[in-house]
Structures are given as structure tokens and as C-alpha cells.
Length: 122
Picture: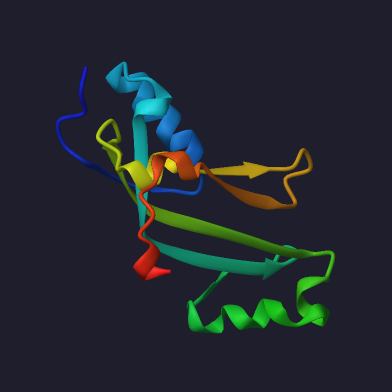
């Protein structure tokens, strides 16, 4: 079965949203992909009200005295476009992201056998 049209979704968990779409459409999760269209970020300390923060203001979390507070809570909502990813480009098939077991580091693995190399561009 193919996903005939793209699906726009607002979610706090893109992976769970992909699972839901895969289940509803009877597609393999490996056949689905998504593009990030937008995101919004909110934060709060303790039980205070959530405050929305703009993308430019995210530098607030660069400050250790803010980011390391025990009662800091951050949540994000993502606007994503889900599509049937069967017709992937050679480049997207050659790149794979892998995380360590603690999910603290992400490494890109590139299979250069699937990519064309043009010496004059390097």
C-alpha cells in the first residue's frame, strides 16, 4: 500500500507519530519518512506556567545557571510532514545516523560505495 498524500502532523514525539501512521496505513515503518517544517519550544521551572520561547531566544539554555537547574522542564512540539519514502535518493540511502547505547552521541555513517565522487568538485 502506498501513502497517496503527505500527512501534516503536530506532535511532541515524531517517532510515535510515524508508528501511528504506519499502523493506520499498513505500511512498514521503514517506508515512511518525515520533514521537519517547524517547531515550538516551551519551558518552565517547577510547577510554574509553561512559557513559550522563540527560536532566537533558545540561547537562554546555553547558560549553565539556567540549563543545569534541577526543576527546569523543556518541551517541544514539532510540525512534520510525513510521506512515503520509497523513492529515496541515493544520497539519503547512503547516510545513516547511529546513536550510542546511552543516546548521548550521534554519528553519521556514510556508505561511499553508493555515492558518485567528482574529483573536480573536491
